[in-house]
Length: 148
Image (cartoon, rainbow, N blue to C red; front, top):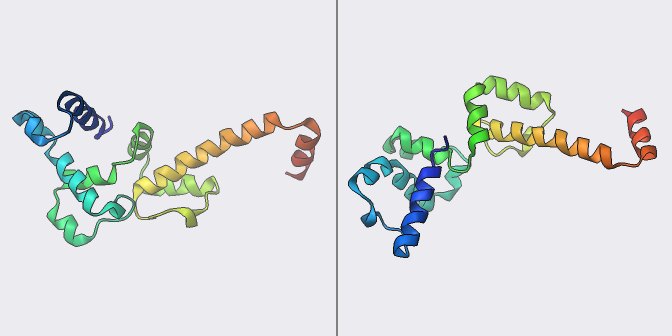
């Protein structure tokens, strides 16, 4: 399950009940449950560039592991999580390179999430290519087919 989904829903519920979000409206249980989300959100407000890059080692030592995980997984959805749990980093690299993805376009080659994003992007190419081929006139399709 996506780690940010419940937290975002809680923020929306509190916003609709009270007109704005504040930790003062949360119960003690909710504060304990989402304390790493609060830390990650505050960190991302101060350092928004760290969402796509590696967190500097000084800050990595100060932050708990759960918070670092939440920072890295901020913009990921369930499909990204499934791919990251299924494959290890070397398998992801192999699959992405096999699909001829331009590695120069990747933000950070050290992060597993960057390779998972690239793999999902290459999967979308196949569907777009199929849609393009089915919508082409037959004459143009045969010219491209003979070239390939």
